[in-house]
Length: 475
Image (cartoon, rainbow, N blue to C red; front, side, top):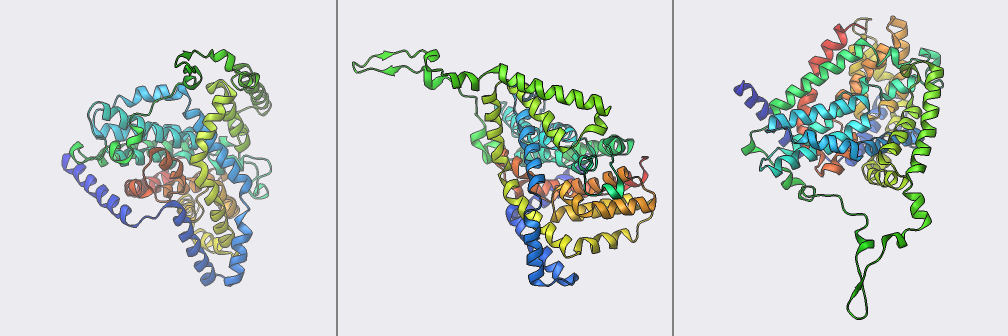
């Protein structure tokens, strides 16, 4: 066992060193992929250089609504993860790991469980828990390998698309989705809430946890949080009233205590009113319960808008006042900055490969060799390739959902099964595509190159697992 673990550690170190040398920052990754897509479209399709520039601009602004929905998923998920209620539980859990292997495995489990239920929550919970575990180890004089902890936090993105926040699943469960004439409305009860999806989720959780355990270096070879983010070691919550309660200096050198109540304005009372937060949250809860009662089951009711609505209400209840909730949302927007900038570029790539017909060529080439039995594996590979160029589950589905859905219907494969197979490919190559790591990188203060060596190991390990699971698991 020790020999096997040392081999995995050595392989992980080689991949980490390769990543450190060759992986650019996420924005440059988007730029490079734009260039690759542009060249490929010029070589493989009838559209010429000028036409593909037009395709690029034509797609550049097409995902603004969806981008806003994704930003809301991220920031509302962050607000829930950053609440005292959730943070207190994470802090307690963080004191449990006693060595690097336990620390990496525990961080992965927490991140993946959060990511299964909500990709935004999982991403933020994974990042926060990685910091908490590293801090807890530092306080006890232990050195937990911080880049691996951050990578373990990012594994939330390798399970999310078989869970209830699946953007392709949620989009396909919406009444007016783009492919309704092809596959109809596909409720979540036919996609993520199936044995097929549950089985894949369990396989991911077990495989990734074991891999992280084996990847962890010995403590003498580990690099702790103090090397990457010393400012995070002693972060504590400040006293919100400290400035207003400090004594004011007087002309005679004395001081006069300032009564903080005298400083509170009516606007402050409104901002800090629990009644208002609870009233708004209760009103949202009434709508949610009423809507679910009308539809019947949450698996058939959930879509992107309702999902965000639920998490806004939950955040208001957890943070208790409008000002506290707004502060959490403000903190979350820093992590969303990369999404705001890069989403139009990936939408531009979408414009190139869809406008030129390149996506059809790629999809048809793979689907031409598919049979009813092999179709899930083919859809997985297609989703994985497409995710490198358009790292948005819903955005990718918007390009190839009609092709995959139509092929599934023609082959007699259930559309819900096709959605899961495609989504598995999307989340699989998240371990190489750093786009969704941007919020985690901002919180943990590591670079993409620090974690991608480890996440690429996870990608490789999961490859046979996904192939077997997609082919053999019952639907």
